[in-house]
Length: 310
Image 1 (tube, one colour):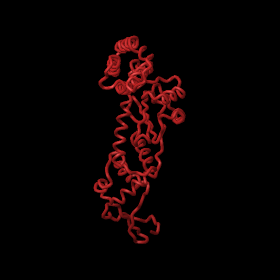
Image 2: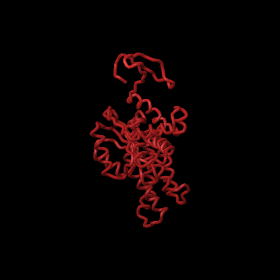
Image 3: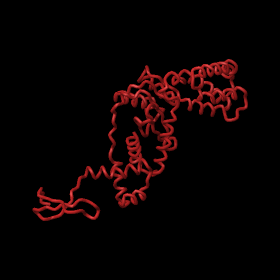
């Protein structure tokens, strides 16, 4: 148009958009605001990513063509979300966990606020067993202002070592569910030997400890078991799979006890990483709804998922 500001309202187009009329050049026109347009279109991208709607469903709901919906999704997948580090200094109680996304090749890690059950940070295609990668991640979080009082973790040695290197005075709480699950797996569902049966009962009871008295009784039961069976198991030369797993269960239980019951002294400390497990379950469900993405779009999918679910 001529660019004149001498205009007036001139009704609506069939799609509901405002029409204007220029008194100078006598033409009708509409105004376009690309920022507002992209913001409005992001609604359909969020529905696709977070709620699992298919392109066909979004096309029927929005009354846009499937080609247009694909164009909207592709546009936002090519935009990198901006990570915000605001208020991280106020977060003191955290849950950290990782999970495999595709087979055992690609994984992701997440950091959650144990007090609010909210996601703080997430990283896709991250090697949780890599000490150097963990050190780099935790130093980045520390530089962003994170100063935690406690971390609840699954017990991976590299994670514990990296956390203590970056925050030496922080409390590390071992996830009781992971201790129980792994211990029961190594003891077998129906153990044959008496020592394995007794140890299995200990693993079954560990997650139900709610008071200091119950903790003391549990530790006495562990000491009694160790005095009767533990030393003998340690010195036996057998190397069969079942017996080797029993030795692993014993070692894991004894090594985890120093960091197993911090939650009894501070109710804000999470005793399990179940919050993260539930989050991973939801995230994987949404990813399966849109499986088949290219590697670049797959990374963008998780980056946006972590950003939108904070």
